[in-house]
Image (cartoon, rainbow, N blue to C red; front, side, top):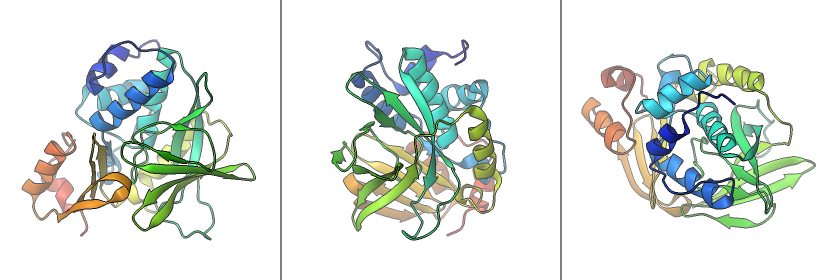
Length: 271
């Protein structure tokens, strides 16, 4: 943990005030405020820009800039925040299953997730899964449905492999799987390099942006802009047809100022 981390600036960025401490109330409040204020976004990989995980770069981008980031940036920031407050946090590595067939082989660890120790037991915290961003920490308890403001989740375990699933209109959908092996910064650096540069990973070919507000989930995948209610219920589905539309959606729905001209971004978007 760096002594140069500016906790007050972070709390101002997410609009969080009041008393804080290493407890569930603080964790839940910060988690919810974070995903509302700092969107998930993969503009840098799409634009072939480097994704940096050092704390100075993460702060400049996600706190000082009007930007978001993807899982390694988001959860690196959250881990630093929580440790600064006094939480005990372990970084874990997840294998994404959102788009995978149930019987397909496991892929590499391309996701970062956090286990946070609390007096009433461990919790799972994750502000960086850009297909179904968690709006709340979850109890580290298996085989029970956990309802949050915007979703319903279930943690399962088989032979030491944990699986997190989200309830969707078509049924339960696996988000990712992980085990209890702690990850160190070099593990994340390697995964981050692959995730931000490989043509086999969606972020280099698809613009993915997501923000979770108090009662709506805003999602952009290339030109498809969707607004969801709880459990993935689609309440609006719109195709972005112009540069001006894209600029407006990034600004108003996601609070993002792009690092490149919107015209350049629009030309990279598939249908």
